[in-house]
Length: 78
Image (cartoon, rainbow, N blue to C red; front, side, top):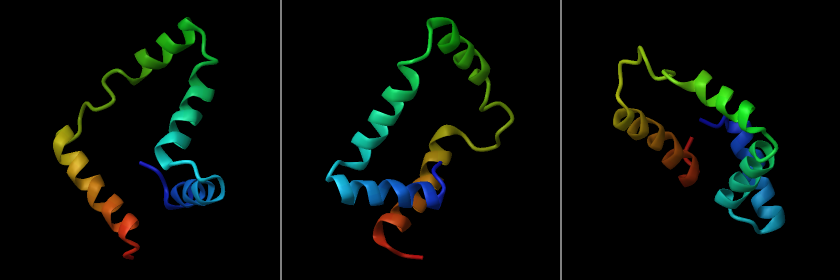
């Protein structure tokens, strides 16, 4: 999940460039991860495997919970 400061920086960049939030994120991901070797990419994937273990909520519950925050931020509510 993005911090409020990260989200604010992205929104400012959207306003400055006219590029959508999704496109900014895609570009950042491409820039960061296209530079990885296959070995490094595999190492990162392996290190993330099982990251969800031990959580009490399932994936759907997590998405519902974070969407509430996103809806709040997009609506301008505090």
